[in-house]
Length: 217
Ligand code: TZP
Image (cartoon, rainbow, N blue to C red; front, side, top):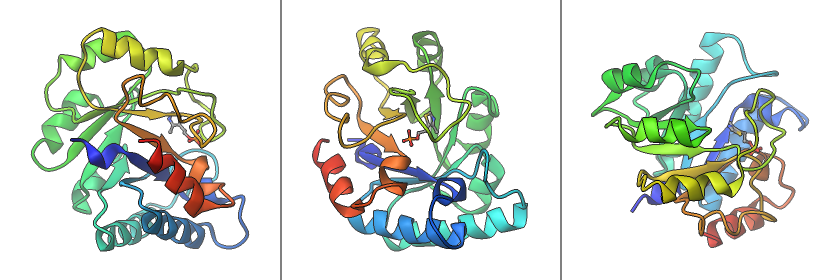
């Protein structure tokens, strides 16, 4: 069905700064390990404190990530940069509620890229469900997260259940604080996949953790 959402890895250099060495090299290294482990999708998200600021550097790194994903036949998404996503021939673009308005994203990208939209509450879900052209909803933060300082309030798996109870049928990928200790139950609540940053970037047993996260799908 929507198998590319099963284990959706998101990362940028800001998520790799806890490691020694160059954050871009670390990102590429972790991404390759994650691809070898079987992630089903990757989103390039260079954002927030510690992220790269130089657009040339960002573009080159995004290109390297795209090339890696292509080598493993895994869809490559770009966070909140429609122009970059189109330029790189990405598979998709993901936007939040405070990013480029979804109608504009659809106008620019429909037929060229898959489109994901973040949903933080039921009202946003109902509104987005009326708009055709959105391929999936990113619903969260499900649990509290260390990876996004401006994260909205935690919504729990209750929001996934509420969205399904409201007969909203768009594919859902759950996000926020998801790891091997709390991932069970998210799919049962109605999610099609898990989106994670730190469960992979900060893992000390990356392949085992990825295998476990995949297994709970
Ligand atoms: N959007 C909502 S929570 C979040 C984003 C990008 C961060 C998720 O990171 P983690 O480390 O998996 O909690």
